[in-house]
Length: 430
Image 1: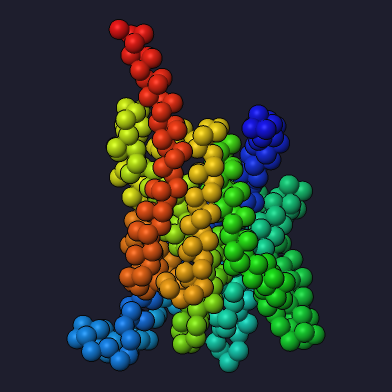
Image 2: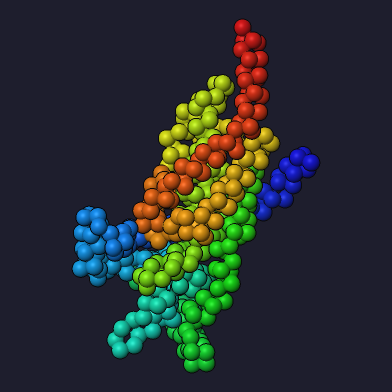
Protein backbone atom coordinates (compact mmCIF):
# COMPACT_ATOMS: atom_id res chain seq x y z
CA UNK A 1 0.00 0.00 0.00
CA UNK A 2 2.80 2.37 0.89
CA UNK A 3 4.56 1.63 -2.41
CA UNK A 4 1.40 2.56 -4.29
CA UNK A 5 1.17 5.76 -2.26
CA UNK A 6 4.80 6.62 -3.14
CA UNK A 7 4.09 5.90 -6.78
CA UNK A 8 1.04 8.19 -6.70
CA UNK A 9 3.09 10.98 -5.13
CA UNK A 10 5.91 10.69 -7.65
CA UNK A 11 3.85 10.24 -10.79
CA UNK A 12 0.78 12.41 -10.13
CA UNK A 13 0.93 14.73 -7.14
CA UNK A 14 4.52 15.95 -7.42
CA UNK A 15 4.29 17.13 -11.06
CA UNK A 16 0.98 18.93 -10.39
CA UNK A 17 2.32 20.61 -7.26
CA UNK A 18 5.50 21.62 -9.09
CA UNK A 19 3.50 23.31 -11.85
CA UNK A 20 1.29 25.11 -9.31
CA UNK A 21 4.32 26.30 -7.35
CA UNK A 22 5.94 27.78 -10.46
CA UNK A 23 2.76 29.23 -12.00
CA UNK A 24 3.50 32.91 -12.70
CA UNK A 25 0.31 34.36 -11.24
CA UNK A 26 0.57 32.36 -8.01
CA UNK A 27 4.24 33.36 -7.71
CA UNK A 28 3.33 37.02 -8.27
CA UNK A 29 0.58 36.87 -5.63
CA UNK A 30 2.92 35.17 -3.13
CA UNK A 31 5.75 37.64 -3.76
CA UNK A 32 3.30 40.54 -3.72
CA UNK A 33 2.07 39.66 -0.25
CA UNK A 34 5.65 39.24 0.93
CA UNK A 35 6.54 42.68 -0.45
CA UNK A 36 3.63 44.32 1.36
CA UNK A 37 4.28 42.45 4.63
CA UNK A 38 6.52 45.05 6.39
CA UNK A 39 3.81 47.73 6.18
CA UNK A 40 1.19 45.38 7.58
CA UNK A 41 3.38 44.11 10.42
CA UNK A 42 4.24 47.64 11.56
CA UNK A 43 0.60 48.70 11.35
CA UNK A 44 -0.57 45.65 13.30
CA UNK A 45 2.04 46.27 15.97
CA UNK A 46 0.65 49.75 16.61
CA UNK A 47 -2.89 48.40 16.87
CA UNK A 48 -1.95 46.67 20.12
CA UNK A 49 -1.01 50.05 21.62
CA UNK A 50 -4.40 51.48 20.68
CA UNK A 51 -6.25 48.61 22.39
CA UNK A 52 -4.35 47.69 25.60
CA UNK A 53 -4.74 44.11 26.93
CA UNK A 54 -6.41 45.35 30.12
CA UNK A 55 -10.01 45.57 31.25
CA UNK A 56 -11.37 49.14 31.69
CA UNK A 57 -12.09 48.17 35.32
CA UNK A 58 -8.48 47.17 36.05
CA UNK A 59 -6.86 48.44 39.25
CA UNK A 60 -3.35 47.73 37.98
CA UNK A 61 -1.49 51.06 37.83
CA UNK A 62 0.37 50.35 34.59
CA UNK A 63 -2.85 49.14 32.96
CA UNK A 64 -4.73 52.28 33.99
CA UNK A 65 -1.92 54.48 32.65
CA UNK A 66 -1.84 52.61 29.31
CA UNK A 67 -5.64 52.77 28.96
CA UNK A 68 -5.66 56.49 29.67
CA UNK A 69 -2.83 57.13 27.22
CA UNK A 70 -4.48 55.12 24.43
CA UNK A 71 -7.78 56.92 24.97
CA UNK A 72 -6.17 60.36 24.94
CA UNK A 73 -4.05 59.77 21.84
CA UNK A 74 -6.24 57.22 20.06
CA UNK A 75 -6.35 59.16 16.78
CA UNK A 76 -2.59 59.69 16.70
CA UNK A 77 -1.88 56.02 17.45
CA UNK A 78 -4.34 54.78 14.82
CA UNK A 79 -3.03 57.02 12.02
CA UNK A 80 0.01 54.81 11.22
CA UNK A 81 -2.31 51.79 11.36
CA UNK A 82 -4.78 53.40 8.96
CA UNK A 83 -1.95 54.30 6.58
CA UNK A 84 -0.58 50.72 6.59
CA UNK A 85 -3.03 47.93 7.48
CA UNK A 86 -5.97 50.24 6.79
CA UNK A 87 -5.01 50.54 3.11
CA UNK A 88 -3.10 47.28 2.73
CA UNK A 89 -4.92 46.39 -0.50
CA UNK A 90 -3.16 49.33 -2.18
CA UNK A 91 0.25 47.91 -1.28
CA UNK A 92 -0.78 44.39 -2.26
CA UNK A 93 -2.14 45.50 -5.64
CA UNK A 94 1.04 47.44 -6.40
CA UNK A 95 3.40 44.65 -5.34
CA UNK A 96 1.58 41.88 -7.24
CA UNK A 97 1.50 43.94 -10.45
CA UNK A 98 5.18 44.79 -10.07
CA UNK A 99 6.22 41.14 -9.63
CA UNK A 100 4.07 39.90 -12.52
CA UNK A 101 5.34 42.69 -14.77
CA UNK A 102 8.95 41.76 -13.98
CA UNK A 103 8.14 38.17 -14.97
CA UNK A 104 6.98 39.47 -18.37
CA UNK A 105 10.04 41.75 -18.57
CA UNK A 106 7.86 44.87 -18.55
CA UNK A 107 8.61 48.09 -16.70
CA UNK A 108 7.54 47.04 -13.20
CA UNK A 109 7.08 50.50 -11.72
CA UNK A 110 4.89 51.80 -14.56
CA UNK A 111 2.62 48.74 -14.53
CA UNK A 112 2.39 48.85 -10.72
CA UNK A 113 1.33 52.51 -10.78
CA UNK A 114 -1.27 51.82 -13.47
CA UNK A 115 -2.67 48.96 -11.40
CA UNK A 116 -2.86 51.17 -8.32
CA UNK A 117 -4.68 53.86 -10.31
CA UNK A 118 -7.19 51.29 -11.58
CA UNK A 119 -7.73 49.88 -8.10
CA UNK A 120 -8.36 53.34 -6.62
CA UNK A 121 -10.60 54.25 -9.55
CA UNK A 122 -13.12 51.55 -8.69
CA UNK A 123 -12.46 51.05 -4.97
CA UNK A 124 -12.26 54.57 -3.54
CA UNK A 125 -14.95 56.77 -5.12
CA UNK A 126 -14.59 60.40 -4.11
CA UNK A 127 -17.47 62.13 -2.35
CA UNK A 128 -17.31 65.69 -1.05
CA UNK A 129 -13.60 65.79 -1.76
CA UNK A 130 -12.88 62.65 0.29
CA UNK A 131 -11.82 59.18 -0.80
CA UNK A 132 -13.69 56.26 0.73
CA UNK A 133 -11.40 53.76 2.45
CA UNK A 134 -14.10 51.09 2.83
CA UNK A 135 -12.44 48.75 0.31
CA UNK A 136 -8.80 49.74 0.73
CA UNK A 137 -8.18 47.41 3.67
CA UNK A 138 -8.89 43.71 4.08
CA UNK A 139 -12.21 43.87 2.24
CA UNK A 140 -10.44 44.94 -0.95
CA UNK A 141 -7.82 42.17 -1.12
CA UNK A 142 -9.54 40.03 -3.74
CA UNK A 143 -10.25 43.09 -5.89
CA UNK A 144 -6.58 44.09 -5.61
CA UNK A 145 -5.48 40.63 -6.78
CA UNK A 146 -7.86 40.60 -9.75
CA UNK A 147 -7.06 44.17 -10.81
CA UNK A 148 -3.28 43.77 -10.54
CA UNK A 149 -3.32 40.62 -12.70
CA UNK A 150 -5.84 41.99 -15.23
CA UNK A 151 -4.00 45.27 -15.74
CA UNK A 152 -0.61 43.57 -16.10
CA UNK A 153 -2.02 41.07 -18.60
CA UNK A 154 -3.55 43.96 -20.58
CA UNK A 155 -0.23 45.78 -20.76
CA UNK A 156 1.55 42.55 -21.72
CA UNK A 157 -1.00 41.83 -24.47
CA UNK A 158 -0.63 45.32 -25.97
CA UNK A 159 3.14 45.02 -25.74
CA UNK A 160 3.17 41.66 -27.55
CA UNK A 161 0.88 42.99 -30.27
CA UNK A 162 3.08 46.08 -30.57
CA UNK A 163 0.07 48.34 -29.93
CA UNK A 164 1.17 51.71 -28.64
CA UNK A 165 2.56 55.10 -29.54
CA UNK A 166 5.45 54.82 -31.95
CA UNK A 167 8.22 57.05 -30.63
CA UNK A 168 11.49 57.91 -32.41
CA UNK A 169 14.59 56.05 -31.27
CA UNK A 170 16.05 59.35 -30.03
CA UNK A 171 13.37 59.56 -27.32
CA UNK A 172 14.69 58.42 -23.92
CA UNK A 173 13.49 55.00 -22.74
CA UNK A 174 11.68 56.36 -19.69
CA UNK A 175 9.60 58.74 -21.79
CA UNK A 176 8.80 55.93 -24.27
CA UNK A 177 7.71 53.66 -21.39
CA UNK A 178 5.48 56.41 -19.98
CA UNK A 179 3.74 56.95 -23.31
CA UNK A 180 3.25 53.20 -23.70
CA UNK A 181 0.89 53.36 -20.67
CA UNK A 182 -1.44 55.89 -22.32
CA UNK A 183 -3.40 53.34 -24.34
CA UNK A 184 -3.95 50.81 -21.49
CA UNK A 185 -4.90 53.73 -19.20
CA UNK A 186 -7.47 54.93 -21.74
CA UNK A 187 -8.83 51.39 -22.18
CA UNK A 188 -9.25 51.05 -18.42
CA UNK A 189 -10.97 54.41 -18.02
CA UNK A 190 -13.31 53.69 -20.93
CA UNK A 191 -14.21 50.14 -19.84
CA UNK A 192 -13.72 49.31 -16.15
CA UNK A 193 -14.78 52.71 -14.84
CA UNK A 194 -18.12 52.79 -16.74
CA UNK A 195 -18.72 49.18 -15.63
CA UNK A 196 -18.17 50.26 -12.02
CA UNK A 197 -20.69 53.08 -12.46
CA UNK A 198 -23.20 50.66 -14.00
CA UNK A 199 -22.85 48.20 -11.11
CA UNK A 200 -23.20 51.07 -8.66
CA UNK A 201 -26.38 52.39 -10.29
CA UNK A 202 -28.01 48.98 -10.83
CA UNK A 203 -27.08 47.18 -7.61
CA UNK A 204 -26.17 50.03 -5.25
CA UNK A 205 -22.65 48.66 -4.80
CA UNK A 206 -19.30 49.12 -6.50
CA UNK A 207 -17.24 46.33 -8.10
CA UNK A 208 -15.17 45.57 -4.93
CA UNK A 209 -18.41 45.07 -3.03
CA UNK A 210 -19.67 42.66 -5.67
CA UNK A 211 -16.35 40.77 -5.67
CA UNK A 212 -16.38 40.55 -1.88
CA UNK A 213 -19.95 39.22 -1.96
CA UNK A 214 -18.92 36.59 -4.53
CA UNK A 215 -15.97 35.46 -2.40
CA UNK A 216 -17.87 35.55 0.90
CA UNK A 217 -18.80 31.83 0.85
CA UNK A 218 -15.13 30.92 0.31
CA UNK A 219 -14.02 33.30 3.07
CA UNK A 220 -16.56 31.80 5.46
CA UNK A 221 -15.57 28.27 4.48
CA UNK A 222 -11.87 29.03 5.00
CA UNK A 223 -12.54 29.69 8.67
CA UNK A 224 -14.02 26.26 9.38
CA UNK A 225 -12.21 23.33 10.96
CA UNK A 226 -12.58 21.03 7.90
CA UNK A 227 -10.98 23.69 5.67
CA UNK A 228 -8.13 24.16 8.14
CA UNK A 229 -7.51 20.41 8.36
CA UNK A 230 -7.55 20.12 4.56
CA UNK A 231 -4.95 22.90 4.27
CA UNK A 232 -2.78 21.17 6.89
CA UNK A 233 -3.11 17.80 5.16
CA UNK A 234 -2.19 19.15 1.70
CA UNK A 235 0.76 21.11 3.06
CA UNK A 236 2.33 18.15 4.80
CA UNK A 237 1.66 15.56 2.11
CA UNK A 238 3.45 17.91 -0.32
CA UNK A 239 6.36 18.25 2.13
CA UNK A 240 6.50 14.46 2.39
CA UNK A 241 6.78 14.33 -1.40
CA UNK A 242 9.74 16.72 -1.28
CA UNK A 243 7.83 19.89 -2.25
CA UNK A 244 7.69 23.01 -0.08
CA UNK A 245 4.03 22.62 0.83
CA UNK A 246 3.95 25.67 3.08
CA UNK A 247 4.97 27.94 0.21
CA UNK A 248 2.24 26.60 -2.08
CA UNK A 249 -0.64 26.46 0.40
CA UNK A 250 0.49 29.66 2.14
CA UNK A 251 0.43 31.56 -1.14
CA UNK A 252 -3.12 30.38 -1.83
CA UNK A 253 -4.35 31.04 1.71
CA UNK A 254 -2.71 34.48 2.13
CA UNK A 255 -5.73 36.46 0.81
CA UNK A 256 -8.04 34.60 3.20
CA UNK A 257 -5.67 35.15 6.14
CA UNK A 258 -5.54 38.89 5.56
CA UNK A 259 -9.24 39.22 4.79
CA UNK A 260 -10.09 37.46 8.07
CA UNK A 261 -7.55 39.60 9.92
CA UNK A 262 -9.05 42.80 8.48
CA UNK A 263 -12.53 41.77 9.63
CA UNK A 264 -11.20 41.01 13.13
CA UNK A 265 -9.53 44.41 13.31
CA UNK A 266 -12.72 46.16 12.23
CA UNK A 267 -14.65 44.24 14.87
CA UNK A 268 -12.07 45.19 17.50
CA UNK A 269 -12.34 48.88 16.61
CA UNK A 270 -16.15 48.65 16.80
CA UNK A 271 -16.05 46.88 20.17
CA UNK A 272 -17.59 43.70 18.73
CA UNK A 273 -16.67 40.04 19.24
CA UNK A 274 -13.88 38.88 16.97
CA UNK A 275 -15.39 36.53 14.36
CA UNK A 276 -12.44 34.78 12.68
CA UNK A 277 -9.99 32.16 13.91
CA UNK A 278 -7.97 31.05 10.86
CA UNK A 279 -5.35 33.76 10.39
CA UNK A 280 -1.65 33.34 9.66
CA UNK A 281 -0.66 33.68 13.33
CA UNK A 282 -3.01 30.81 14.19
CA UNK A 283 -1.25 28.67 11.58
CA UNK A 284 2.31 29.68 12.53
CA UNK A 285 2.09 29.60 16.33
CA UNK A 286 -0.53 26.94 17.11
CA UNK A 287 -0.59 24.47 14.20
CA UNK A 288 3.05 24.22 13.04
CA UNK A 289 4.99 24.99 16.22
CA UNK A 290 8.65 24.97 15.23
CA UNK A 291 7.83 24.74 11.51
CA UNK A 292 5.95 22.36 9.21
CA UNK A 293 5.13 19.12 10.99
CA UNK A 294 5.09 20.88 14.38
CA UNK A 295 8.59 19.51 14.87
CA UNK A 296 9.75 21.56 17.85
CA UNK A 297 8.64 18.82 20.26
CA UNK A 298 10.47 16.26 18.12
CA UNK A 299 13.66 18.36 18.19
CA UNK A 300 13.51 18.26 21.99
CA UNK A 301 13.29 14.45 21.80
CA UNK A 302 16.25 14.36 19.42
CA UNK A 303 18.44 16.10 21.99
CA UNK A 304 18.30 13.00 24.22
CA UNK A 305 18.46 10.44 21.41
CA UNK A 306 20.75 7.39 21.54
CA UNK A 307 21.32 7.85 17.80
CA UNK A 308 24.31 10.05 17.07
CA UNK A 309 22.64 11.19 13.85
CA UNK A 310 19.39 12.31 15.49
CA UNK A 311 21.20 13.91 18.42
CA UNK A 312 23.33 15.95 16.02
CA UNK A 313 20.23 17.00 14.08
CA UNK A 314 18.57 18.02 17.35
CA UNK A 315 21.48 20.23 18.40
CA UNK A 316 21.70 21.80 14.95
CA UNK A 317 17.92 22.38 14.71
CA UNK A 318 17.09 23.66 18.19
CA UNK A 319 17.73 27.37 17.68
CA UNK A 320 16.22 27.60 14.16
CA UNK A 321 13.15 25.70 15.38
CA UNK A 322 12.58 28.30 18.07
CA UNK A 323 11.99 30.74 15.21
CA UNK A 324 9.81 28.34 13.18
CA UNK A 325 12.62 27.47 10.74
CA UNK A 326 12.85 23.71 10.49
CA UNK A 327 14.48 22.87 7.16
CA UNK A 328 17.46 21.40 9.10
CA UNK A 329 15.25 18.84 10.86
CA UNK A 330 13.04 18.15 7.81
CA UNK A 331 15.95 17.40 5.50
CA UNK A 332 18.32 16.17 8.20
CA UNK A 333 15.97 13.50 9.60
CA UNK A 334 14.86 13.22 6.69
CA UNK A 335 11.06 13.40 6.48
CA UNK A 336 10.85 13.28 2.69
CA UNK A 337 9.60 9.81 1.68
CA UNK A 338 10.24 8.51 5.21
CA UNK A 339 7.42 5.99 5.92
CA UNK A 340 8.14 5.82 9.66
CA UNK A 341 7.71 9.55 10.23
CA UNK A 342 4.88 10.10 7.73
CA UNK A 343 2.00 9.57 10.18
CA UNK A 344 3.18 11.94 12.96
CA UNK A 345 4.48 14.52 10.47
CA UNK A 346 1.04 14.82 8.88
CA UNK A 347 -1.27 14.22 11.83
CA UNK A 348 0.46 15.99 14.74
CA UNK A 349 -0.24 19.44 13.17
CA UNK A 350 -3.84 18.32 12.58
CA UNK A 351 -4.19 17.48 16.28
CA UNK A 352 -2.81 20.94 17.10
CA UNK A 353 -5.33 22.50 14.73
CA UNK A 354 -8.29 20.74 16.36
CA UNK A 355 -7.23 21.65 19.91
CA UNK A 356 -6.40 25.27 19.06
CA UNK A 357 -9.56 25.72 16.98
CA UNK A 358 -11.86 24.66 19.81
CA UNK A 359 -9.82 26.61 22.36
CA UNK A 360 -10.38 29.71 20.20
CA UNK A 361 -14.05 28.91 19.56
CA UNK A 362 -14.69 28.54 23.28
CA UNK A 363 -12.74 31.75 24.03
CA UNK A 364 -10.18 29.90 26.12
CA UNK A 365 -7.54 31.70 24.09
CA UNK A 366 -7.74 35.01 22.26
CA UNK A 367 -8.24 35.39 18.52
CA UNK A 368 -5.74 37.18 16.33
CA UNK A 369 -5.91 40.97 15.96
CA UNK A 370 -2.46 41.78 14.61
CA UNK A 371 -0.04 40.45 12.03
CA UNK A 372 3.09 38.99 13.61
CA UNK A 373 6.30 37.92 11.83
CA UNK A 374 6.10 34.14 11.43
CA UNK A 375 9.67 33.88 12.73
CA UNK A 376 8.65 35.02 16.21
CA UNK A 377 9.03 32.26 18.86
CA UNK A 378 5.66 30.52 19.09
CA UNK A 379 4.68 31.48 22.68
CA UNK A 380 5.59 35.12 22.05
CA UNK A 381 3.96 35.21 18.60
CA UNK A 382 0.73 33.59 19.83
CA UNK A 383 0.38 36.06 22.70
CA UNK A 384 1.45 39.05 20.59
CA UNK A 385 -1.02 38.27 17.79
CA UNK A 386 -3.93 38.26 20.24
CA UNK A 387 -2.97 41.49 22.01
CA UNK A 388 -0.58 39.86 24.50
CA UNK A 389 -3.01 37.35 25.98
CA UNK A 390 -1.05 35.00 28.25
CA UNK A 391 -3.50 32.11 27.68
CA UNK A 392 -2.26 31.87 24.09
CA UNK A 393 1.33 31.36 25.23
CA UNK A 394 0.22 28.73 27.78
CA UNK A 395 -1.62 26.79 25.06
CA UNK A 396 1.56 26.74 22.96
CA UNK A 397 3.49 25.05 25.78
CA UNK A 398 0.64 22.55 26.26
CA UNK A 399 0.68 21.73 22.54
CA UNK A 400 4.46 21.24 22.54
CA UNK A 401 4.08 18.69 25.36
CA UNK A 402 1.31 16.90 23.45
CA UNK A 403 3.43 16.90 20.30
CA UNK A 404 6.32 15.26 22.17
CA UNK A 405 3.99 12.49 23.38
CA UNK A 406 2.55 11.92 19.89
CA UNK A 407 5.96 11.87 18.20
CA UNK A 408 7.59 9.67 20.87
CA UNK A 409 6.63 6.13 19.66
CA UNK A 410 7.57 6.93 16.05
CA UNK A 411 10.77 8.60 17.21
CA UNK A 412 11.74 5.47 19.18
CA UNK A 413 11.07 3.19 16.19
CA UNK A 414 13.19 5.38 13.91
CA UNK A 415 15.87 5.78 16.58
CA UNK A 416 16.12 1.98 17.00
CA UNK A 417 16.57 1.58 13.24
CA UNK A 418 19.30 4.23 13.08
CA UNK A 419 21.12 2.92 16.16
CA UNK A 420 21.26 -0.55 14.56
CA UNK A 421 22.68 0.95 11.36
CA UNK A 422 25.23 3.01 13.31
CA UNK A 423 26.37 -0.04 15.30
CA UNK A 424 26.74 -2.04 12.09
CA UNK A 425 28.75 0.76 10.47
CA UNK A 426 31.04 1.03 13.52
CA UNK A 427 31.57 -2.75 13.54
CA UNK A 428 32.45 -2.73 9.86
CA UNK A 429 34.84 0.18 10.38
CA UNK A 430 36.61 -1.63 13.24
